[in-house]
Image 1 (cartoon, helix red, strand yellow):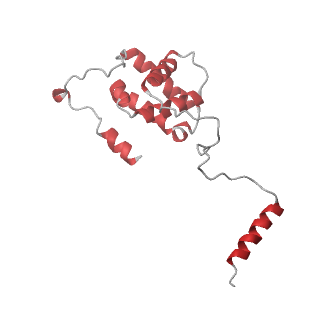
Image 2: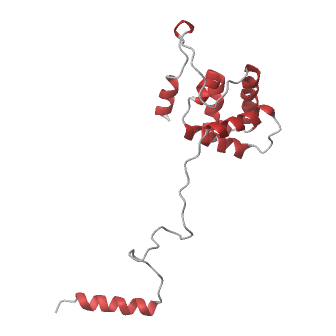
Length: 158
């Protein structure tokens, strides 16, 4: 978290005289100011409904803080895993998507947060399902004692 805080501090906007206009990131359109304020306000209201939401949902609280401080540019500067976790927390917190700001935030977070690629697995419990790997199975107590006795006899001093 310390690294993330230091990184975010570096995102603070420069003074107006030294700012260079930055083009919007690919696929992320500029938000109109009223919609940005609506998203920020409805997210703050949603988090305020639950007493400890900001402590238990830190990624979503961080998104709220970035919306308030830096607007859209600061929010999209966050790493994709942070945005993906914030989306998960938002979806866990509410199932009422009738509010325009929350719905728009969900849509934009889902577009911005690229999920990690899923590795395809076969239906085996592990990937060790080949004949050249060790395979373990359960046996009865009598079979275990037989093998245990044979092993102990082999290691006894003569």
